[in-house]
Length: 211
Image 1 (cartoon, rainbow, N blue to C red):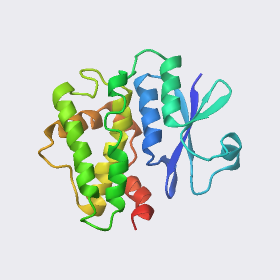
Image 2 (cartoon, rainbow, N blue to C red):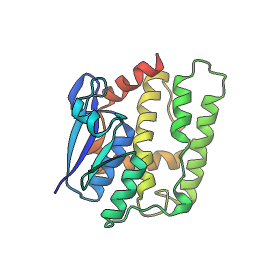
Image 3 (cartoon, helix red, strand yellow):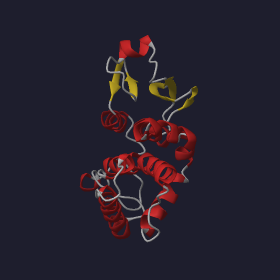
Image 4 (tube, helix red, strand yellow):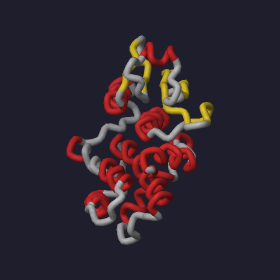
């Protein structure tokens, strides 16, 4: 039995996978665990009624476990680990929150109109902390083995790279060599290639929030 999952459709292209990093995180887990699944692409600008009936909050991703639709990527990933323990993607607790402030820092910097407001500096601090961690523990956050925390970060780093490159002509400093290696490693995964949104859809997704 394939698991059913509702994910974001691309803006203006309802039959193409959209740019939600939380949806991609769940799709990465499904791919890596080789769990068969069926995707429903949801146009978030015009949500179908059946989707609102199963999920009144209207958020994605949602996955159907047994007869219950479950929302929230944290909860979904936890349930996938529980129901499909092999291969294990569980992150050791001491590494579980590594890099968790990168995404909110990126969003603040992306939306910032004032170059001296400290948002760029705050993002750089978070990236430096991750770089130091990878230098000591890499190549992945928990060491040799890829785990759930990497699949949570990979889509966010992709959004960061694409959106900041496009809207701010900004790139992660070359001196953060361990992050660059980490990104290369993650983005070259077959599961990542298969589940990522096209760059133009990532840009289109951020456009309204930046302008």
